[in-house]
Every structure is written in C-alpha cells, then in structure tokens.
Length: 267
Image (cartoon, helix red, strand yellow):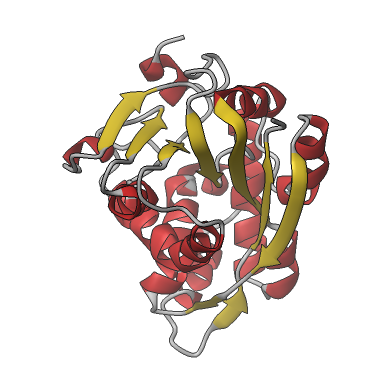
C-alpha cells in the first residue's frame, strides 16, 4: 500500500499542515531526553546498524546517526518523509515505509526503535512482528508508547474536557488508535517472543507557555481537530479558555505516561 494512501487514511497530522513541524518539535523536545537515556543505557555505539520506525521529524534518527559513527548506519522510515529528507547525514538513510503493510529487511539490525507510533494503527501486532523479524539474533527492540489515562486524570476543566474530546475524535478518525496502549505494550512484546524484557514508565511536567515541555504539542494536537470538536458540541468560548491554559505560565500538569519496553530477539 502506498505511503500517500496510508497518510490520508486515519492519520490527520500530515506534513503539509503549516503547524506540523512545530507540533512534532514540541513533542521531540519533551520526549527526547528520556529516549536518549534509554538508548545510551542500552549501549548504542559505533558500528551499530539501527532502524528508526516512524521517525517523525528525525531528532532521534539524527542522534543515532551521530552515535553509531564511525562505521554504523541508521535507516529512518515513516509514512511521511518530507521532514526527514531535509536531514543530511552520511550515516542516515530515509525511506517511505508502512510498518503494518510491509516487511522490513530481515535480520539486519542491531537495534530497532520506535516511539509513539504503535498506538495509532489497528495492526500493531503485525507491526511488532515486522520489527522483531528485522533484528539480527540477539538484537534489541526498544518501543515507547503513551498511556493518556494519566493525562486525563491530571487535567482540570475546561482543558480536560477539550483534550478528552480531541483524543476521542482522533480515535474515531483513525479507526485503530488506542489512547491507553502503553499499558498493553509489555504483554504484546512478550507475545512476540522477545527475551530479557525490561520496562519503565516515565512522565514529565507540561508547563504552560513552555513549548519544550510539550505545551505546543498538546495545543496544536487539539487545534488540528478543532472544527470537528466544534461540530460535536465544544463551543468556541470553551475551546479558547482551554487552549489559553496552555499559554499560562502558572499552569503545569504531568504528561501522558510513556511506557518504554525493551528486549532481545532470541539467538
């Protein structure tokens, strides 16, 4: 199935949207420190062959390419590659790829990593299988997925009502998104046959007016489905009040919980 078809089938955050780079940049700034800590602890280093699935705007793909030099390589795949193709690094290759519909090079990689990707497609078990098959025997798979339940509990109205409505809308549009998938990640990776499984949950503070904490990510995520929410009973004053909260420096709330699970393909 072609990338253009998949991009328009249930995933509303297309790269052509004027604010998508800012939305992804805010999410990267908030999540990258935790991801980099995991990757560093796993020992990623020179000469490793790495695969970054759902590479987004490419911050982790770039970090991996720097980390595995000299001698290493990084293949960054995504349904949309315009933002990735702006990156130029001798150790980085960019490829348009649908992780559910298409298998990956088999047995090639020392590390496969994906973040905040598997909660989107209904075919996540197939995607996990493709990633495990891409590992060499003994290779590492690190998957990080959100559980938005903690965010729902942390917010107060009117922001809570608007965020819940936005994520419900995204689940409806996508036909497969699971806002609480993070809590189901560990058993899914165990069922895929990985060994030496470990897991950790982490969260950070989303701070109003601080886009590096994810405030812009949350605001722009809501903005992308704004018209749909208005049509479903979220009026403009409520929407404006909710989004203004994210620009208020006195606001703070814990982010969605990110569950990181990692393990090895059996030798």
